[in-house]
Image (cartoon, rainbow, N blue to C red; front, side, top):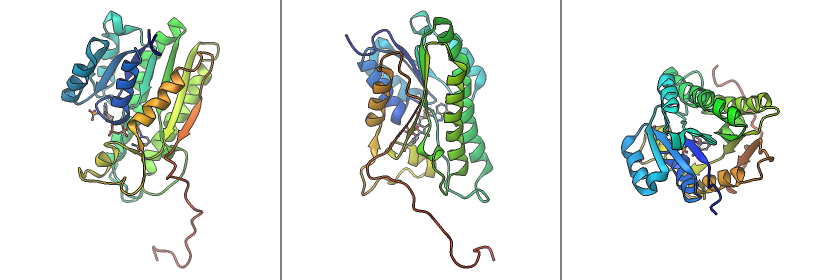
Length: 255
Ligand code: NDP
């Protein structure tokens, strides 16, 4: 018997990176998978690989009405979602707070925060009714550690973890699990999206994690005995560690 027989996984951002790898691994382990994202051509390619066990839904998670109607319209064999992976997300830019583009901030807030809220709010009632389910939010180490060049991205990811854990508190007495996973540097399309440069090669000269690494971690989390809840989990490549204590010496740069 495959590890995820009988599970139905709704995965946001399944057209690339972590989400696509999670969809492929979960399907290989017997789950029925609802793969979502904005790029229909990529969803079609995924569906042709995964077959009838995969339902694709072209979906922008920023669109609340579209999220609600996509979930309400799931066909019978996919309706009882037992695993929600709130993965769709992005970082835009590396500018400091006083120079960043406010439109970029709003896009990150709408995708990384509101998208997670809309999907959770639409799918969790069914999990509560069936007294069975697992919600996994993909946060980031950027939400756990302070650093320059991403004030709003990091803040959205802190939100994701805080929301997951407060939701878990709401779920006292219910057999619904909630996990927030915070990955470190992983080679996906993330940095291409962040910089707008298709040739961006941020991962040169060190060994980052891969999408398959993260998919494996999620599989491990969801296949633990159903009474075991991984609350928060941070995962990094060995090559990545933490910043040194920074101090600026000398006169203010603004003088
Ligand atoms: P990718 O850019 O490779 O994939 C991002 C996915 O999110 C795509 O499938 C994209 O699909 C989807 N997405 C983006 N915006 C929307 C939207 N408005 N509606 C629906 N789907 C959307 O990046 P990753 O796989 O790396 O990123 C996945 C998650 O992991 C993100 O939340 C990211 O913040 C987080 N993360 C990534 C890290 C890394 O180093 N790579 C580290 C820590 C966290 P489409 O464009 O087709 O809509």
